[in-house]
Amino acid sequence: MAKPKHTAAGRKGNAPASLSPNKNEKFVFEQNMEAEETPEQSEGEKKQQDWEKKRQTFITRTIWTFVMIAGFFIAMFSGHIYIIGLVTAIQIVSFKEVINIANKKPQGEKEQKPAPRFTKQLSWYFLATTMYFLYGESVIYYFKHILLVDKVLLPLANHHRFISFTLYVMGFVFFVGTLRKDTYKLQFVHFAWTHMALYLIVVQAHFVMNNIFEGMIWFFLPASLVITNDIFAYVCGITFGRTQLIKLSPKKTVEGFLGAWICTIIFGFFMTNVLMRYKYFICPVNDLGSNVLTGLECVPNSVFIPQPYSLELIGLDKTFYVEPMQLHILSFATFASLIAPFGGFFASGLKRSFQIKDFGESIPGHGGITDRMDCQFIMGFFAYMYYHSFIAVYKANVGDIIETVINGLTVDEQFEVVRGLSKYLHNQGVVSDTILDCLVTELKR
Image (cartoon, rainbow, N blue to C red; front, side):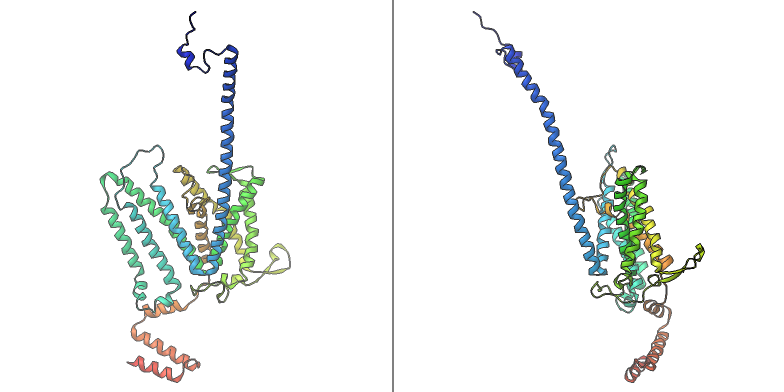
């Protein structure tokens, strides 16, 4: 009797051909069940992996949040020089992150020829020259009483702007000299991108640094208002949010926007009341070596001294006392709530145009430094402009007088000033006869 032939199809099938129909059906059924279970298991594993990833991101983000807060307060209480160093580091890293975006090719664009060798390095040269100019301006303005009496630093201070201009022109000439026919567009994109970053980051950071010199409160208060507004915008948004605010940030709501404004004003009022009690915060810096332990001494600005305000305009015959700063804080809180967030929206639009999520990975769990500072730069710029427009008191200081004597008088006239001041101090009992005679004798030579 001939044996049944096993076809190739039977050998390659899911079940051997020798199996009975019932066994065959059972085998196929079990395979189908396994095939149906596999997607469910993979979906469950995927959800588990996503949850673990979110959990790890949350832990990392929380840890680094506390690290940043601790580092900020340590720098602030250690002294003005440390907080200036922190601002400097932030602006350099932010500049690096923004410049790196220029090197990214948006999806869909053709590959371009690489830029000349020194194109990227030239961006850092322009950063160095800009920082030299801006930092020098600040140091000369606030510490001219030290610089203008130093033999080495005096020429640098007197010719600072021309030196800065010369350095910039050298970079400009070098840029033009390295232009290549096949990379014109790419080189000019780098040039424009560099100058945009210098203006939006470095120049605005310069004003933030000047705020520190004017008093720590003008740096800390604006920064804390932006952070507070960001927190309450999130809280109010998830609690009351219904209406979308702007298409660039779909999660931002009108209710969260306005709710955060009210909460920021309340926070600013109470925080100002606390900071005004400490001269370390309200006094301009005159010694970069000072810290929270050594403290600072000064005559407080009148905005920190209670002033009488009448309610006659609203028909009430009453007068109350409040520090003018408590009223100025309304402007600061309003800008931090209604205008500063648009710095963040601007950054969001920039990232979307290059199809990236974050500016960088400088802070684990948070993205780049620029992602955290996008609102702070414009807020610090506003604080500087508002302070010098409505709050600052301008009066002659030692640095201004020394600058006038050095740059505006001849050597003989300078001698006359010293002799006259010496006689005045002698008559006040501050300078002894011996010192006066010595000064007069030396100045006659």
